[in-house]
Every structure is written in C-alpha cells, then in structure tokens.
View 1 (cartoon, rainbow, N blue to C red):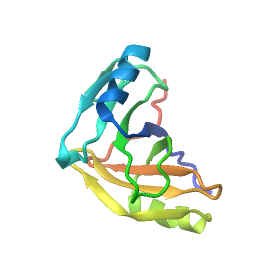
View 2: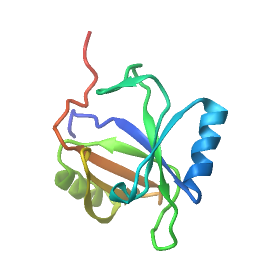
View 3: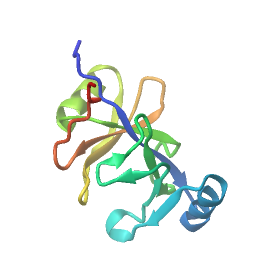
Amino acid sequence: MSNTMNPVVHFEMPAIDRTRIAKFYTKAFGWQAEMHGPEMGDYVTVATTESDENGPRKAGAINGGFFPKRDDRPGQYPSVVIAVENISDSMKKVADAGGRVLGEPMEIPGVGQYVAFEDTEGNRVSMLQPRERMDVRPKSK
C-alpha cells in the first residue's frame, strides 16, 4: 500500500446547454462561470469559492466545471477529478484494482494530462496529472 493519498481537486458534470447551466449555478449558488471555446472542448469552468492562481484559498474547497453532453461518450454523470503524480502509473493502478480506463490521456492546454475511468461500481471518475508538477498533499502546520 502506498502512503500517498491522491486528493479530489475538481468536480465535473455534463451539460446539454452550457449557457443555461452556467446561469443556473451562478444564480442559485453564486458560482462564477468561465466559458471556454473549442480549443478547450467548449468546457465551462466554475469557481465555487474564492481562489487565486494556486486554486481555492479555503482548505478542503474545490472548483469544478461542465462538459458538453454527447451521445458518443460513455459515463456522462457528475464525477470528481483526482490529482495524480503520474497518469500512466495511475492508469495501471486503476486497471490492476479492477477499474476500467476510458480511452487515452488527453492534454488540457495549460492544465495537464486528463483521463476518465470507471471504478468497480461503474462510477465515472477522472484523474489529472497537473502540467507542472504540484505538491497535491496537504501542507502540515
């Protein structure tokens, strides 16, 4: 067993209408949405808490996003994104533990390598190897 825990750093949900979903979460919860273009897969990122260039400023808080719902993609459900140090090693660990990796890693410009997987219960989850290696462990006081 590894002593390293990989934290949840992001959440994702599918959306049929990205403008409508962004307006809903802004109005209902005060989240700040940012629409991205085709170069980022028409993704919508949302800030759910006060953040800076290093991410959420509040311990334990995460931000998220919405991806376009499409008929040709499996497992389009709300999910979480787990930060990993090495995506290739983590893909092997997922498979060895009984999960199923959904495709090959894709590069998210300026962010890092990303791939989705299904766990042993059929839940869609994703993992991200940040572009510039960041320490994903909580800082000790």
